[in-house]
Image (cartoon, rainbow, N blue to C red; front, side, top):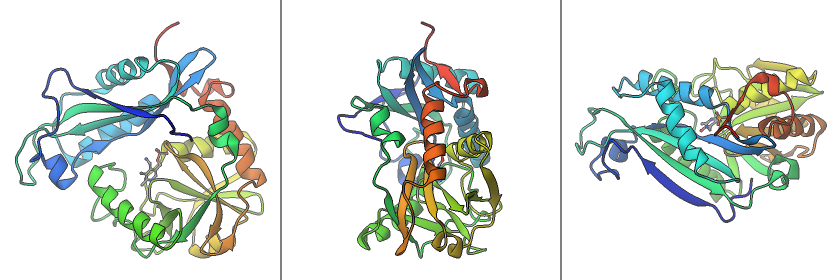
Length: 306
Ligand code: PMP
């Protein structure tokens, strides 16, 4: 994904204040919940990928955190589509956030409000996305594990949990790696990367950690599972050990922002960044998000009628 020439625009809820008070709990304690959503150009106009799935996850995050707010699915959909529509013909990344604007410093949460950041990739094209077969990332298994599901629900996408990701990512970068794989704190099995899910290929079979371990049920992860099955690839969600990473022929990461990114190594164990399974799935993904294939899955919401 190319982010050259990108610009970020913030769209505040017109019914509320602009800006985040410094004392806001969401600022001080990381209690905002959010989503990352992509909008792609298709031959029938611009379309948001799996919009309702993202918004349901956003509502689920707020519900599990137990915070009151005034938004339902249609209202959120309308806001996101209006913001996406203003972007013109390019690809964009949409970041809807529910946060508390109340400036109290304690951990008691006030009513949440909606805000959205839009990043437009003015130079993005099919050639800069997954189709360009990026050179691949170098991964290491982090000593920092994911939070236990008994400490914080892994399906709540809260800003605060990204301190955990930042810690692992910073340590990995200091050791010369591009990203870290984090383990489940109890089972010690592979959970996910810092902002992405992980897939492993062995003997033509595609394996990804099951949701019994502590990881986000990524929407790109689900997309890859569906597409791989459609392509006739043998797919398994199950326990993934560190040894499975070391013995893999291919390893790749999936996430809304990163899309599909192949790895070249895990702690010195080489993997093929242009392996046949990655190439097939990445091509199907690139075509699906741009409406060239598998339109029957109903994953694209056009930003406006032509
Ligand atoms: N795991 C974590 C911790 C993430 O932050 C993300 C990015 N949202 C993912 C996995 C991938 O999720 P998705 O495919 O829904 O973007």
